[in-house]
Image (cartoon, rainbow, N blue to C red; front, side, top):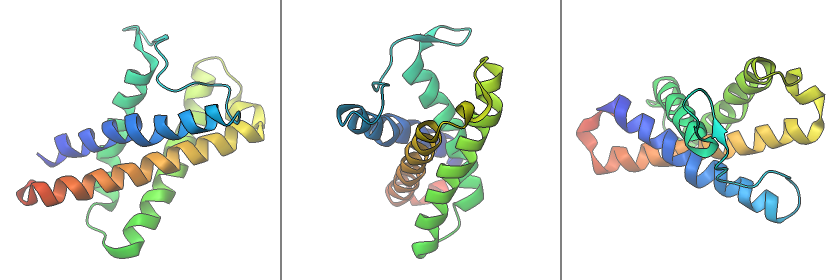
Length: 142
């Protein structure tokens, strides 16, 4: 049950926190990308935001396995750092080149800072959902 709930935590954190912050940044003129992109992604041609949420769910499992037993302030700080760094590193150094884009977005500071901010917000959102699910279903092992 823990794997399912941690997947759900990461999935929801993508929809609420990652895409929510992207919407704020877009409205403020700090990002050209709008949230909840319906452009087709991947071989299944699902909307980009759903593909992103799926991978957010996969990362949610990783975050739960890495940090799920932590407590206190350290849990929140570690969740922010986990979210900001690990998914960003994989996206910038693995996913971008696989999609024919320059490594690390060509070292464009806006892309680098955007990745850290968006994924850091995702990490905190995932931590929040993990704690919420752990309180609602204490036998779930969260």
